[in-house]
Length: 202
Image (cartoon, rainbow, N blue to C red; front, side, top):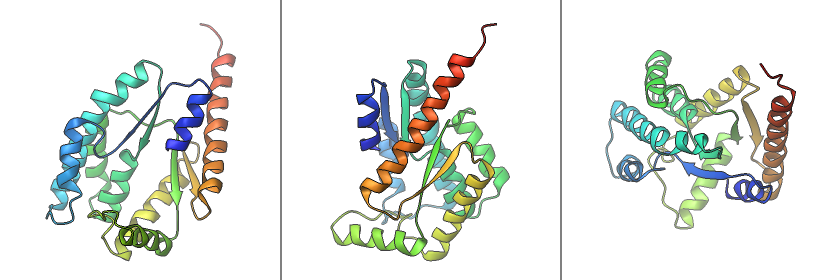
């Protein structure tokens, strides 16, 4: 995301980078408890804490940035709740959708990039980061079954919304992955610009 933001800024685009959970001051306090592997968090509490973080994030940061014509890049958003708490934790689609709508106020991304890896490779990378001294959070500590359900949920969403959700093959090098990201994002932005130019005045 940092590489993408840097290149977009060089193109003269106003960019805001953020993340969930923890994109706001309140969110950072929620994140500390939520992802602490030593903290026992009930699945329903987890779902609602993510929603509280997102509600604050959307209203305090994301919407104001969009209103000032920024491109907002967020590391995770509502699709993560559908995948992790819906498919991963087993909450019904109806409950998850209700919570997502309440938290976001209906705000959806124009473009979502899903960085896809086989579960075994994903867990191996997580293990290498942990061996390197990087903190492993509660969700990353879940087992193969959990992460398989999460990945399948993301792929199902991508198949259902191919215009919004682009799947990025994350098995290559950083440079290869970044090249794929730049191609997808610039094609999307070029398409938006063309749409604006072709729009007839009322």
